[in-house]
Length: 280
Image 1 (tube, rainbow, N blue to C red):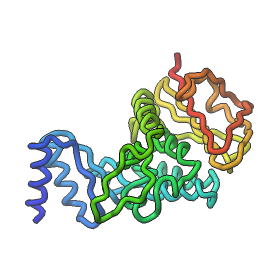
Image 2: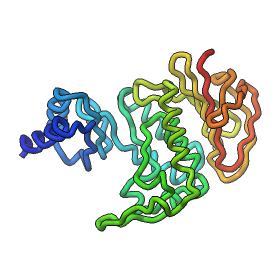
Image 3: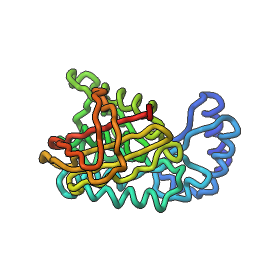
Image 4: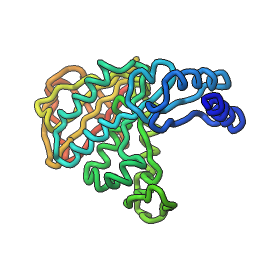
């Protein structure tokens, strides 16, 4: 059986030139199968492998990326007021200390399971949706666009029945523009690249850590600063670290902004600022 499955996987890479696979419940299959299959596939061409599972050993030889279910749960809890910004620290701490540097963790806003069984992106995230979407692209993790998100799909899709997405249900939807901007921004800034190719997240200290998630990511001359108000109330906070000292261009507006130790910054409810500098 294993030989036949491996042959089938090879077939689609060789004949259809697909780029890789997402393996459903990958942990239910012996890891030696995945490792041998990966070797066989890479002999045809380099492939990308995503495991719907949480296990560091899957990154040893077989998979490039694994699901970060816990990030999704944390983000949802913060959006619903069940936790504050400090809840993210447990995830990022484990990600840095327990996972291989090259591992890509998939932190998603929505997937087929969450949409069907938990609720739509709007039910789960409400007014926090845009901020959490932006965070999923600029934090240390692999971003995901689930089918229909870019069209502002607001319905729970049937799981076992045909349920076509209405791509014109919301003509005023701006999510497709946001995803396009974020994808280009991530590609243009090496600090935001995935796994070992991007910059580690370094906490930027402020005097309002329960409301503000703030961090710096650097790669060479490229530096990214993320400032996220993770609450439904406005906040004015003071930067209490020199880790981000410098002048930056703001994501989406290109406005020039200086950040330094002692800077006072105000963000509205669920507002964010993502800033970039390239050492010029």
